Length: 164
Image (tube, rainbow, N blue to C red; front, side, top):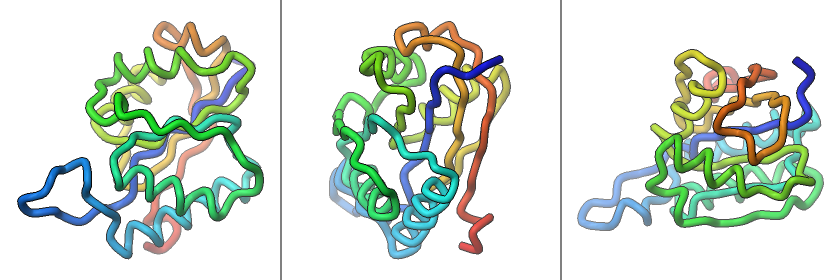
């Protein structure tokens, strides 16, 4: 398969608990900030800078993107979308299908189980995405055809690989 598009799927970094507070407002732990920055360095080191970032509006996802972006060259368009917070894999595929057709590389920063489930559906096998993990998928066609696409795993990263 010759990939025409790349989808970078990233699960948000490690967040703390928020007793009696809404889950949407949970923030990153110090480890989460370190792991997200390490993920950004890994992406930058491979020249994987997205054209478009679709990020959940949840605090921990927004903070993850901020830590990642501080390590990247370039200024991708960033869309914070609250629909991504509670989305399942099918919902996520539908939202990604709305991406600008001119975007060659799109990055999703969000939550499990949607992140791992979408990667699994596209790859045709189960995928494990712990916090801060990244899966880079190569896709043969346009974003609007994402739901029926078969992807290949181009690269992957986990925080433990960086010594976290």
